[in-house]
Amino acid sequence: MAEMSRFIQFNNEQIDARQMITYENLAQALSGNPHIHLTERQLMEFNPKEQTISMSVFWRHRTAEQTHLGRLSDIYLLAEGFWRHFSQRAWHEFQEEIAELNYPKFFEQQLIMAEEFRLMESVAKKRPGTKKAFRLRAQAYLATYQHQIHVHHQKGFLAEALLNYFYIALHEGSLRLPTGGIFDTFGDLLYKWQHVFDSQSTEETIRIIWALVPQIEEILKKDIQLDVYALLDQLKAAPFIPDHEHDGVCGMEEGSDEAKETIEETFRSWHRESQDDTGTHLRFELERGNEGKSLSDEAVEGQDGQPPTEVGTGGDVDATAKPQKEESLATKSLKKKYTKSGEVFGREHEQVIYQEKMITTHGEDITPKSVMEKWRLQQEPMVRALVQELRKRMAQKKMSRRTHLSYGRLDSKQLLSFVTENRPRPFYKKDAPSKPLDAVFGLLIDGSASMMDKMDETKQAVLLFHDVLRSLEIAHEMTLFYEDAYEATKEVQPNTFEWIHRLEDGAVDASEKIAAMTSHEDNRDGFAIRWMTERLKKRPEKHRFLLVFSDGEPSAFEYAQNGILDTAEAVIEAEKQGITVLHLFLNTSEPSEEQLQLFSTIYGRQSIVASDVAQFSDMTLRTLRKVLSLVVQSM
Image 1 (cartoon, rainbow, N blue to C red):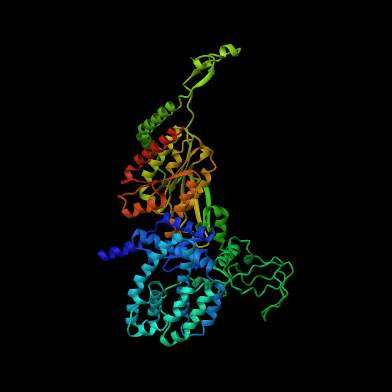
Image 2: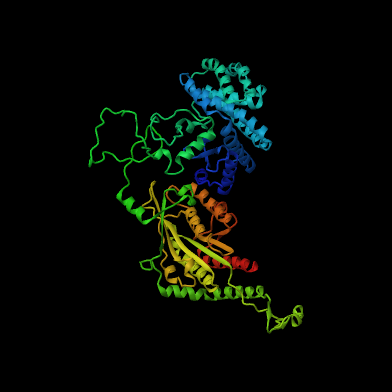
């Protein structure tokens, strides 16, 4: 049972989203490319089609310092080393040439290993601050390979053992290498392998590999089975898109097979071609027509009124791609009712469509008016006490002098006005009328299905929130958000924002709309936070707050692990706009350590947890008191 618990814990492992964002910012800064995204996969990897680079999970389950430095070493190699100083042209030529050899996969892995060593040295020389991370990297992999080399030898995996042998020789020297048996045979390769220390380019490294090919072909019995590197796998699969000139398709039928020189150029090329629907890969240029002949023997002349035989959609250059079916009538009808999300909402929400509407006040799940009045009556003393307390503080802060009055207290500094002015006004008053608090609030309420058993407590907290801000004449917006899980597909993910109270509604009582709140399906938190941020950042108030009432982590279509990172990014983006984001978590039981860590990862220190759902209204009141007190102090 204990082992089963460990297994479940491993599968529920959460990433530190804020730290991942920091790593991604570093990768973007080193590469000079603000469009790349950082992920974590089994092995380091480039993916130009998705505009992502991936760190290795090799660094998980270590001390915090080891994990941090190990991931930094991955980023240094990905975004600085291989990014600019690895020749793709030479790499592709090498791949073509070794295809006829007995062990092409081994030689690919061997080349990447040698280039990794060369680029670590190159980056460390250019950026001395990276040496600590690279030193830990070498130590960690040495410990792994020194163990694996014997395991591979015993199991007969000579190719894997030889690769381990080469790594140890590079990073620790020949004195630490195993001896006897096959290892003595491996030792004969070291004289040529040591030239990697002097390599200054990918081309030089390739020449070293070629010098070793005849001997290695004689030693090995089969090609490598276990991948040590997957760094360039996606670069092999990704076709290189030519830079089309805008002069029609004449002469461009065959395209260009010339590879980009660096990985940086490949990523930029893919980004230019796929960043929006106006890319040349989605456009027919028919200025002069196509001078080439049709490749089909079955082509017939077209006729007016002839129905299409097949409907397809544009896509990337892929020999295996097939025409896709036209969107269904249901999908088309759905899109007509919704608005397409834009770039401002992030790449995770490219297929999201959304609608904004007032919540309907009729249905089966509406809380009776008598119950709402009962809740309001119970909360009234708390609301009145908080409002009076804040108004008293505001009055104390607003004892500013009103000067130049014809009556009031005599101002000794204005006595000279009796001589210099025909109608002197040397009096002042202290009781200047206080201004309303310079603040605005946005409240997002999780409308997912998991909120069903907590909806009554949520309504009470929302009612309390509304009554306090309405009494203080503070502009606020309250919105229920959710995603339609039944209609969500890869092509479209419908989201809805149901207004309970809008910023423009002023002091209008929204209790009837609060009573109409009900649970739905999924919650796409990052998208909702960005939506509310767009509304709040247009407001003139000095203090802007965004509160999120939720009972768990983001959960929507293809929005599980990446939803955590995306939501954390949305929170950081809001904070950059001067908006304070607060998360209030409600649950029917005490939150687990894993949940607390998750909320801390997403919201930082701005996450407040209720140990019991019954205390949610009290927690909301305490949060409002603290926040509004800070606003009063800043007056």
